[in-house]
Image 1 (tube, rainbow, N blue to C red):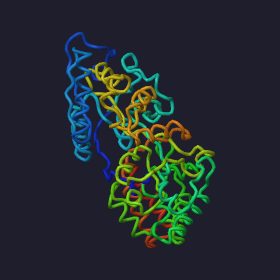
Image 2: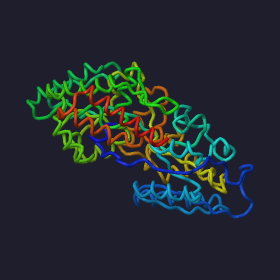
Image 3: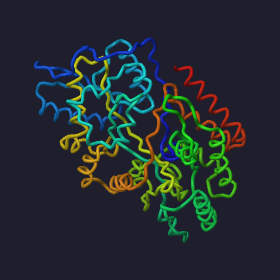
Length: 432
């Protein structure tokens, strides 16, 4: 996703979990349901709407499982990770944890999450696609179950294409050269009233990852080493500099303004550009803000190269400190596999990662939801990506800083690429 172009970045710092040794299941024995009443804790981040829906789902679960009481607790994004680090270090972690990909390695590598293969009797993952499940694995251990799934997309404003007499591209064949030509054509035919596109990358890990995979490269290896080639990153910035110069991409100052305005006030939502990048799940707020005919197209080159990837919106995990892992797994099973939960939760945490639940909720989706589901069902996805290593959670704000320096002419692309990768490696090494 061009996250800073159409959605403000997370900007969260890496979590610190000092002094934690590898843990196993707290009980140390077989994972099995208790014959006695049990209370478990469940934690998540989010706003009041998410809390209301989640509590409704908990109530439905408790009705089906009267022996299990669930105490829910939630915080905003920043406060959530501070609280989770504190409770985990104090050996008082909640049983069921909403987890993000940025922090999965931080907790999984330290043994603070349970390998959910140990709970397979209570948590059925057979309905998930193998590539989706892989996103929750570290060194072969299934530490987390994806809740929602998204994929990068080109978001195009069909109204502006029609207004200026530009033909919509064929996303099964178009290339980056085609993208540049179309962006320039839109700017020229509008007489400069709009720019064809916003920045095509360098604003978040997703956009850089796609470009790297398209060029046979990856951000990280499976063992957590930074493998991004500085020449590949430099080429991404050079591509955008060329389009800024030709007018196909908005100026550096306009890009900063768009990023600061967030999703509803950014250039794509306000009709200042006709093409941008985003995750398919962002189409609903973009439609609402723009009032335009927006379409989701595959990224240039993807139909042939399969460089795109499935990105979980978030995960469910079980603490290795839990005294009730069977009950915790049973709750997760209900949340990801049962229609009763899907009816309540809908797409609030993203398009359901479980295909059966995705199909179940599809009939009740709004226009944006239908577009998002149709896209993830038809777009080509390549192999799963390596999980962000511990220390890599600051990627987005870091790469945004270097992108701005390049776009404003303060560094050359090659200088910035080498400096960025050195800084990223230092952050990861420091967290090891």
